[in-house]
Length: 438
Image (cartoon, rainbow, N blue to C red):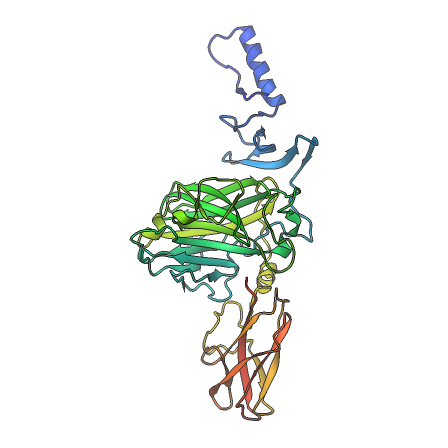
């Protein structure tokens, strides 16, 4: 195996023997596909490289900027395959939902305040923003924005209004997604057959430094932390973390509708949640490394953005799975669904389009609500007045007034929106949301 230069001498005085040796060295490099533990120097577009560290065969991209893995090699069984990721028509490649940040049913792109007391907030569908700041950070917001790397439209952006004076040991600023066990059962974590995972995403930060991504089980008793660096501020940078070893230990929820694993992208964290052992599964709860940079949380006006997040099974990062819009929306609706039109934020006043309505036959009455998508569990149902946008209310269009309503017989496929004090013969209008988020 060798990684000699493929360029033969074309100037100066070269003996026949030297030319023969240079030719043989170049042929040896070609014959062994530039095998080596690190990338060959001075690569060219279309060049092959056998990455012996990760047991991957890679090809140089046509723009000559990166190595693209396309064959996973098993040196024990002498086999090769594109990946051991699930790629069939009936299986999702990306185990995350809304990785492209397209869906934001609640806010529809509006800025959302992130409490600094560790109150978990769904900033966009499936993505939680959480902050704990004993150092008095304030004005932290999260928002879906139309700023993204090439090939994407949206990103999730966190902005710190007033930076913290300091980051306490237990403080943090996190973006995370909990993953349902039904979507991870085949990775066999907690057994000898645990398979590797690969994580990729794009980040942009106004503060350079060292950040982290972490995977953690539902009990918070097993975690793997990987640190990454952002060198250029205000520039989209792709982070790839291939071949994350599968966890053969620990307790993992492998079936059902509960949380199995949570992905954390760590913007800041204090020493309580920092981990010195990286890229290995260890016991306990952690989000960042001991070299974590916390400047985003301490800098007034600082921003941090993520886009194109993918977690796939297999030893290398697959190209981002770009699902059709309706498919992504349906996946989100398993956890949260609304009656409002897409593009209309929850609680918008004077927005009757799509609302449920019925004609009251008595003072106590109601109407059935049928969801488009079966929910993960019996959801929390919230009703809204289409006229005022007030929660817990419906609108009596004949009486031109809001009336009090609530949910009944709430199940995974539907519910009843009902109330009392109605006037018989009056039309009652109500919007709703059904949340089965984890």
